Length: 101
Length: 439
Image 1 (tube, one colour):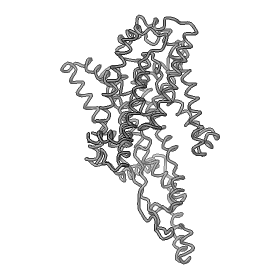
Image 2 (cartoon, rainbow over the protein chains, first blue to last red):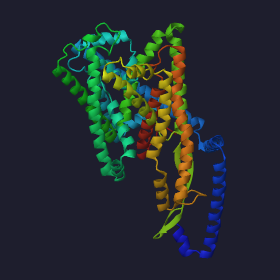
Image 3 (cartoon, each protein chain N blue to C red):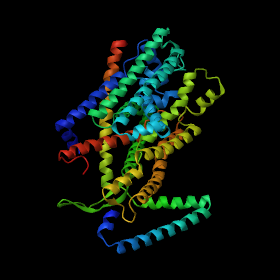
Image 4 (cartoon, helix red, strand yellow):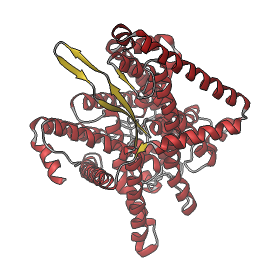
């Protein structure tokens, strides 16, 4: 992608922006790094905790109708499977009893 | 929705796959009922009746084998050796460079690793089978049973060898059945077999709760357990469906006269990215100490005593703590081996995709792993808590929580596998332009 920009667009318009962005990036990084270095383990854990909460806020949770349909489908599927397995098991138990018992 | 099930059966291709899977399951259950040669069927049955379905030391593992372990059938070892083998190999892949190289090799390398997994399964099955036969012969399999030491009447070396070989062959057969389901049926074979084994224990366990209950002739407890179970299913589905969507923008580009890309999609990062695997791994790993004790035979030495008091009961604090920690560890471990941020970032870069506000390449990989780490923490804690909470709660109300059917572990596995399988059927239906179950 960067190659395409470099070859077609004017280099003046591309590079300064890039450079400032990089500088900004390094600045913020330095700042953050310094802060992290100074802070104790609890403060770092606090920061991590806040970041976890921030990420959790961005999570897309299923809405009510989705949740209901998925839940019913799973329950029906599981119930059907348990039913099938129970019937098979009952049959084999009787069979084994008949053969070995 | 029920019509969707019917439609699934009306699609010829899908019907074939479903029936094939069911056929394999029938075989699987058949093997779980045929006793191993050399076992006195009547004595075993009497002992199981006396034990009342309470496996004690083998509670969890008996649940995973669908009740076949205590009955000493040809599939007594169940799918456990295979799972343990695949965990060990996946752990080793991180440690041993040669295996890592094989994994990176692609299809051929993966086939080689699968081959190793099979050999390891065989070895584990022999080990476990010998242990099981030894405990059955000495009568420690059913301690309280009167005829416990008459389960295996003929204790000659030849007979013992035949029993161990039969059980090992059974395990290899299960492994094959699992791979058949993965290849030609619906869903992941290993998890489907696990699902079936656990499902097989449900009705009798529920009935046991009804019998031992006191409110309205046991129906009170029965209803409570069902209600709690349904609520937990709902909760598990809720978290399983939750995802953090990382937006990805694709650059528009012209190839010839047509333009490609220019679309915006997202990378779905599930809150519980690892699925049910950590739970399965943790519970089968925790079984190993008990296996070692059982294999070493003399339970008088200090460490064996310590293990059998602390690590074999599902409601002991040390066991619970260890279980929780293992689940959290395996959640991170599995996410780390199944989702490689650098690879994803590389692929995105190759196809001209980027996350808005993040530069392509290394910063993207760093951002992905940042998000992944922070979203996996709550995910893994959720897994651990769900697996533990019911066990703890029941331990307070009743004495033994071992064979509680709605234990967190079994609920997680049942719902996780159920959801996965239903989704697979759904996508197969949609491929043929039918509307599926989920609208």
